[in-house]
Length: 307
Ligand SMILES: Nc1ncnc2c1ncn2[C@@H]1O[C@H](COP(=O)(O)OP(=O)(O)O)[C@@H](O)[C@H]1O
Ligand SMILES: [Mg+2]
Image (tube, rainbow, N blue to C red; front, side):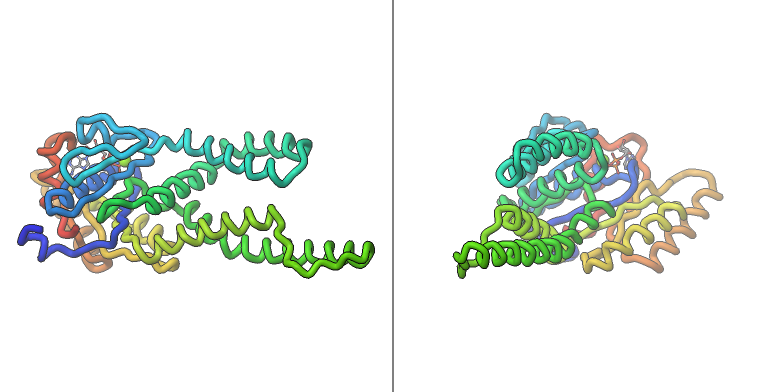
């Protein structure tokens, strides 16, 4: 590591940049990944945005598997549409093992409908994130997608699955005991119900997802110097904070320079308000052009005060 890095705040191993579309999440993710690799911290950048732009920002081609962008910097783009279909197929296969063919055919049409519903893509994305983390080979991973309210609801699912599966287990036990009394073959071994096993497996996965968010992740909101942006950020952070997720500070992007005096004065006031609420981990001015290519990314990465 270079000397400069000793002054930089060190985020956790998994980093997410949050914020509304267009604020600069992809830009900052790429600049951060570049910075880490330059400081000798190897990193994997994962994009799950359906409108992939990571490849364009780095002026390269990226696929589902990590490829090396430069030394210490790997990147992949997950196809959420494909992942979501795979996710559905996996559920169908799991169900095939435990339900009758007739039920399955009903279930399939239901699953097809559900495939286009909100939540499925989030679930697929969460699965992809979990798999990526399980397979972690770099010092850090930066995800160019932040957990949304939907993801957080998914992460709270284990609690629900827990009571559901214990309810199921109890009912099954009662059924089997009753049967045992009828035919006199009372079983003493605990019952392994395939459905209950699947539920437990799902629960374990979601528990893992929640744990990695709580213990290994930092979420850094990106916002613009506008009141609406500050309000939205404050609001959306509530849920994350309740879950106990590390939010070390925010990045202010697209700060005007050389604009009219009134606008500058307005932004100055908003930035003061942001300073009162959050620790500021980076201030990025509005650049003359959009940020494409390593050279421009480097300009941005110099303004990030963390690794
Ligand atoms: N500081 C900046 N100066 C100039 N253009 C910027 C800046 N930050 C982002 N952009 C541009 O704004 C657009 C949206 O940024 P992007 O990072 O894709 O946002 P998000 O991923 O949050 O939707 C892109 O064209 C990007 O190059
Ligand atoms: Mg983006």
